Amino acid sequence: DAKTTQPPSMDCAEGRAANLPCNHSTISGNEYVYWYRQIHSQGPQYIIHGLKNNETNEMASLIITEDRKSSTLILPHATLRDTAVYYCIVSIRANDMRFGAGTRLTVKP
Amino acid sequence: GAGVSQSPSNKVTEKGKDVELRCDPISGHTALYWYRQSLGQGLEFLIYFQGNSAPDKSGLPSDRFSAERTGGSVSTLTIQRTQQEDSAVYLCASSPALGMGRAYFGPGTRLTVT
Image (tube, rainbow over all chains, first blue to last red; front, top):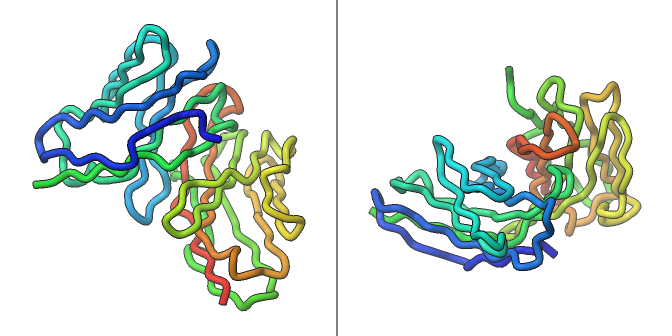
């Protein structure tokens, strides 16, 4: 019961922007959107989170629609090391994060 | 400071034996979480701690599973009478507080029950 919907897989060419969509149509007003990724055989890694406004950090940008029912994670210049499963989670707090199946992103040379 | 550490990194045990998995969170982090990830599957939430207390244990798969946290730091996940379906990677995470914020995950313990 992850409350989000993501495509199961995506491909991206190395050096191009990777745009990963997430639908969260039942998001409530105080729930944040979190993005994590999991590279094979490692623990999940935090990427970014936001509430209403778009956010940017050294790893990625997060674009949240005005109605907050969907968001897009943007990796501006994907590298082969960005190949991973990307999880979109909506939650009020870190203790209530339920991971869904995520999107398996494959960056190709 | 170091990140979240877990031990052992790998554990192979015989069916029916008990196992203890350890998690050392980041110093000062009051919230601690346990997840399980079976092969090729997503993460399954097990339990969280705020300080030493675990308000909600409903995510634990069965009464063979228990967890404790002492001194607001180290946590132990214990599985009694292990079964083959317990084979998975057990992941621990911590965060500065139970409120909004990101969680930091450890590398996990890969448990194999033969």
